[in-house]
Image 1 (cartoon, helix red, strand yellow):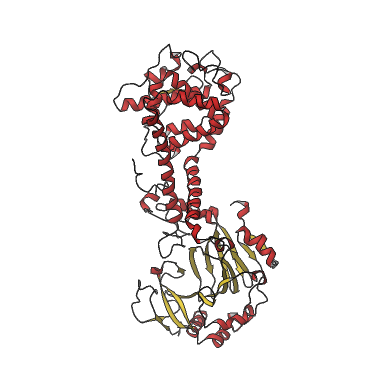
Image 2 (cartoon, rainbow, N blue to C red; image 1 turned 60 degrees about the vertical axis):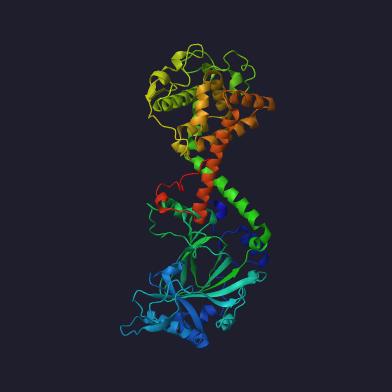
Length: 574
């Protein structure tokens, strides 16, 4: 968990100014211990001190809507998993008393069912008879005491006399104040709210597990177009990793807090949370719109959507290339720190001009840059790239694109690549076997699946530049085959990123000269550019599809979750 996302805890009630500047503005949860100890409700509503009788007397005749769960003790956001029932508040209080007493002669409490309210889950009968311990639970969830946003009156409004708006919220335009009351241990499934939330425990105890919005991809949010779009599809305690593979990391991003009577928890909009309540817990919450949402102009929504999607796509692209690349690059840098400028297996030093990226002094040589002028790591990469191209050409039954000869380089450096395609010469001159890998241009979107992309990734920009220039002068048909037939979407993304890094380190004239030489090997230079750009766009498009799956739950196929890749079908080709 990033330090800036750690939950704040305070035993002092903040001022309105401090709350806005130091807590709310950071969009990080905060526990305010004893924040509402001075509420009348904390003493008068206490079930162990006659609180249920008090509530029954004050608002017993009020009719409220409750949730009836047949999957007790969990209350899911999906309306298919529960019924909504209307009942007098006194009936619910009687049921709560029965749950507390748990005597053998408990009689059931009958309530009228109204289905789910949308007509999708009609009740089996007009009445449901509730008996503690029969597998059902009734939960008063989000019962409005004051509903400002919808401008609705509430029969529970008289309870406002026992609570009061915290002083640090005095400048906030509240959307609603709600009552939450459960008869037995219960859990609300993992979800987020579209408003800032202050959850206040009046009686009992609640445990809240929270995740930042940035961790939502590990929680598999329900489809954005569904009725429960703000809920997670996971059973957090027992996620099916075979279906939801990312869920194994979900708890790494979670934080847990326990709230007792008098405590309050600020839950910023968008933070996922799962709430476990003890037996007969009573809570009040305040919702209000954040400054961010209130300042968003409707006519700008399409622009905001594009900007946010672009940020998420760029983040996903980086994740797709992450794998073990950081470790591999560090290892490459360690290998690159040679005690002298001598190529393994050769007695000719590589050029210092090449090492610093200045190829102007060697570009006019008859053969350009020769392999034996390369640094050891670059020479090894050249071996591997030529071997991969030759392996794929052999498998396809085509003629070799380039053959090594003495006029191009020292042939002993490349014998392993030509005569033994399943071997490669290591840096110390020994021959080691490697598994022949087929480059899969149309399907490879991840670094670990693509040997070509891996080779490109693990070379420093100017070192890769020298490898490509060596191929231009010595193996042009191999370079053409590499770009036109073996460059996957991941490889195209890596190559263009390396091009950008080269541009930052090269002078303008050297940039132009490099690209002139690079594209000179292609019969159709525009086709080569198009192949690279199409691969790069295909990579970006796959990242976009992954974002839709991870953050919006769109086109999510459980069968695809098992791979951990989140690929959502084949990428369209032009």
